[in-house]
Image 1 (cartoon, rainbow, N blue to C red):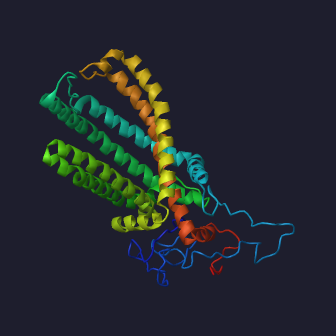
Image 2 (cartoon, helix red, strand yellow):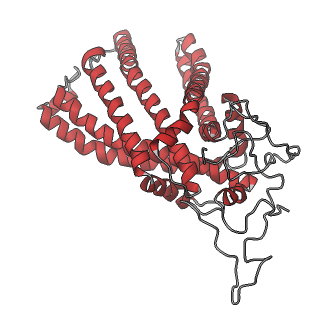
Image 3 (cartoon, one colour):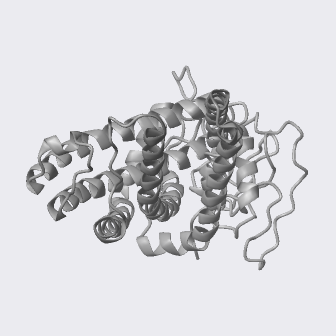
Length: 399
């Protein structure tokens, strides 16, 4: 029997169609979430949902309802069966929890991430060497129509060169995120996991996760097209100004949507949600906490940027020296031609960065999702029950 927790959302039905959802009262009208119960023996998907009264929690064991502790002047510490305490999390606890989960399950998390990163980088190197066209040369002295034509050709060449690598990177990120999300769900409860068990649980959700990622990408592309398109169609100076304003407005909308949809992937993985339901679920969890979610994500991406910078710069310097490329070639109008030494050394640096960044970011997303459900839906009570902690039995009252 799969011993991972069930994370089903309001009114969701079992994904395999073989079980019947546990009856639960109607969802509250305050937007706080669904109602239901958690079963520690791993209920089928759809048989768990959040509590009906998230604003109240039963007294913790030994406090307010059990034997009184002599000399105890404050509430007891939160239970911590796994990598995080079962209470609303601080920013540091979210980041530390992701690192702790990767450290505790490094064979599963980092081993899988390393394998995916190596395969992905080999594919990217082979495409760069044999399939992608040479970068377009740009004459810095060109003016007028010729300069515009060269800029357009250069942008088109760059997009063609980046598209295959971006596709492979997206697929690698999806596979890693699916595994890490399951690892985090078990780490929160302090349960062991193996790669085979984790992959067996994550595999059915990989294609929906791919569909979710593609749908979000299409939404962002449509927003940018609507923002920039009218100005480009005008083609005059007024059109250029309109395109710039449209670009700025599109960036603001895309940022807002990206943060609002940040928890869609964990919801899809852990609650067995459909693609559209996962987007709605994420928007509901983020509502009222947009700025906090944005701050956590911004700091996460800042940390990943710094890690990428610290690793890529020395590997880039070593690659240039190993390849024998003259530094002056980087400042010429023609693009420098890189050989195998450069591609291999930079590829090793990319593997190191990807192996560490992919699981870390996925872990932060999963823990941010858990934190929002603890804050809104008292998920900590159900996690405590699932972890088998004393004093959190099925008969523990919620109100």
